[in-house]
Length: 304
Image 1: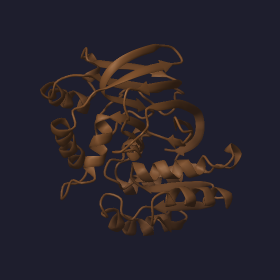
Image 2: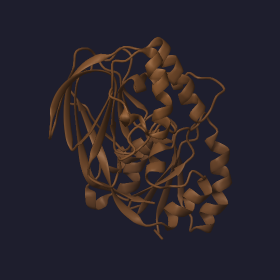
Image 3: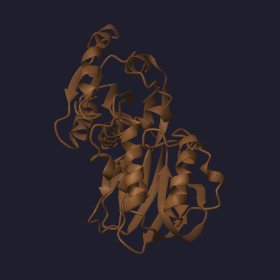
Image 4: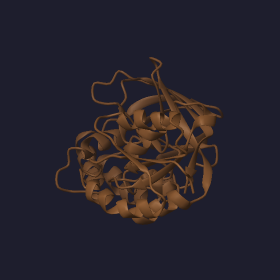
């Protein structure tokens, strides 16, 4: 069991519902050996806290929140030299918690906390994205381009509904209001092609959006990234495809383009909407038309 643990908690995860969950975990944290707590109060704060924890010699940094919190913590850990990086743990208390699922971490916070405090460390892959201006960001689970980024933006405007329901409502809204394909020229380390796509997802983990199994074969432990593209299809067909994304059977359709890569470059005919682990990398008003993505094999060590 690690001797020095930092818990980085996002109190507004899952629309603020994470707070009572974290409070209930305090006795268990003490039982498992204790930890120092830090709470986030503004965007990118978790990145700063994770970097500081690494510099202060913490052996385990636990992201207690959703995929966005994990994203920020991972970016903080990647800012220090490899030999100085603490292990990464996740206690999922967000709305999606997709990357925790890909690591095999329990959806129940109590069980997840026991896993990360007593589990086995495994080297895990991290993705790196760069835009045409040289801006870079690390990511752990998925990069979404087009349709699913609009879903992510809309999901933050859905009232009352929580968990997976947020994403499902946002999907329906996006099919109705934002059904706009874009033309991409793509070159990977093994192929080159051009496509008109409604959506392109680059995956390190197997699912996104709280339960859409976009890339069932993807694993954060194999040194490979996967892509899944949806060709230009009608709104009705897109709606009919949603159940297949929920159970991971969509790859059988002719309008689904899949593959894997270690490095990828793309150029679009117009500005793109892009998310990284559910965090908006390029939103409405974007000027991003060029991206480079690569894998950093075994860059972090996850406890799961």
